[in-house]
Length: 214
Image 1: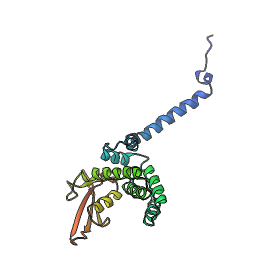
Image 2: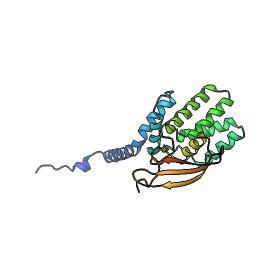
Image 3: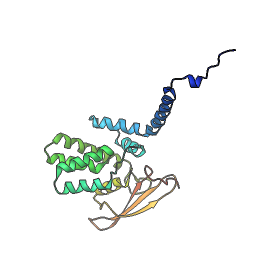
Image 4: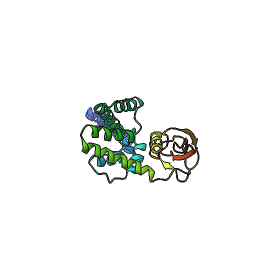
């Protein structure tokens, strides 16, 4: 009678464990896919390549699993307090942590630029200033904010505050959500400090609005 071998039980004990590990690795690789484009662009900038597409970097961050361009509120508040109290060493330290958590954090780069200038580190200051300029230009180039069709494309409300400041307007105002198809918007109403007249600024929020299309 032919000898029948139970293939499963005859395999080395470590084979099932390897199979489980490979399945887990595949699952994790799939989960991390959105981060690849972001990390590639981030590494280029960190390496000194300031010619990259900063808009692509920001949008890649919005899709990535491990990129928080807004930063946790506690750290942001601590960074602002350190900067305002001229504790530049601590301000730069906190800002660098925020940048590590989400590279397109415009405010954190701006704090680093100012802090390193005061700390006598012009090269670092120049780098962060260049990043700030690249990030802001990548938003300003998407429109003028005067209509829905020419809305500024942003990846978070923190960018709305930055752009309002760049325009010489108050960073906070009355916010209205315009949800719809094919795009959704934030409409911010502020008063121009120069003349007092009402100003409306549109922001395209498709990159981060979870109910897009409803």
